[in-house]
Length: 274
Image 1 (cartoon, rainbow, N blue to C red):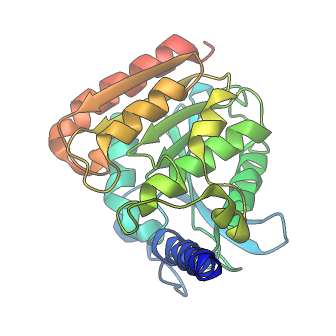
Image 2 (image 1 turned 135 degrees about the horizontal axis):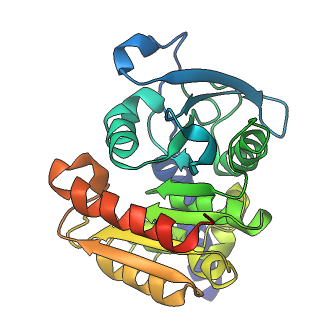
């Protein structure tokens, strides 16, 4: 009986791991090309390689006086390609005085390779490496901006690079918390390791000494607000937060844009070098 219990338990958590991999790490539609003219943004198309050599595609969207401004590496959620996030990208670009670098995830949009948690971690490092090669921009003013599942990429990138500033919006906290929507007991950490890095942002934020800004909606139905508060409390200093009345991914709601942009500009003014 005891043996059967443990076999059932192991089978259940393996199924949970597969569910996490399928539900959380989906990627987006593969396309042959984008018509960037319809985006109404000053987009420069960028082609570079992931750490495994797979071709990656990104947009570099710069301001007129881009040389002295921060550059935000925008790491969107796990579902969709760049075009699916166009409204959010526009709202951020038009409301914050910073350049944007936005990439298609592996196996998504115009990027090649296979979509997986491990490959998106590699993509994050490859994107940081590429941005550091862009001539004339301030290499000491790079911000990793993670949205939803993208916050894990921002935290991971910061653990591998010094002097990275971090903003997370509606961020996931851990694989276990995420899977509590589907499995009441959550997801044991060792299971997610079968699919790549240990997805546990509670551990990562304790060791990141660079400035961090946490943004979350109090009515978020995808990532519960209480988890965001716990993640913030676990984070090392320096840190700041903005809790708003709103749901998942706050930059999609025009009512939030003024407060969001003011907080981000304040974060930049406080922590980034002049």
